[in-house]
Length: 151
Image 1 (cartoon, rainbow, N blue to C red):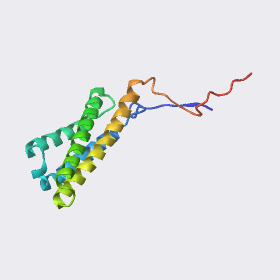
Image 2: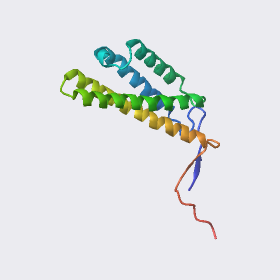
Image 3: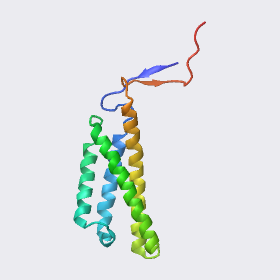
């Protein structure tokens, strides 16, 4: 039997912004905590790195089901972050390997950040996909096949 499950405006269907927000905050915290140990490995200055972390926190805080543009920006941020962190993980591995302890640490931090932002990219994309085809907010639950008709 099919039944309708109403959704509230606070939690629209296919909204994973809360998950994206948590992943952005987690990524920002990892970057803040580990940055002092790897300043000489950073491709940008410490100042630029801190500005990026601040903007990451701002967009985590702005994430809302009401602001579609923020959802789009979150996907862009996550996509760029995956590319950058994975690029530098591969770069440090190819240049220094994992034998030098700090290079190995930088590699693993970048790998972890790439995975965190990959998850944010996935959930952000699911949110945008779900929100683009949104109807009246009703979720239909039940078997996938059409119910039998009475003859």
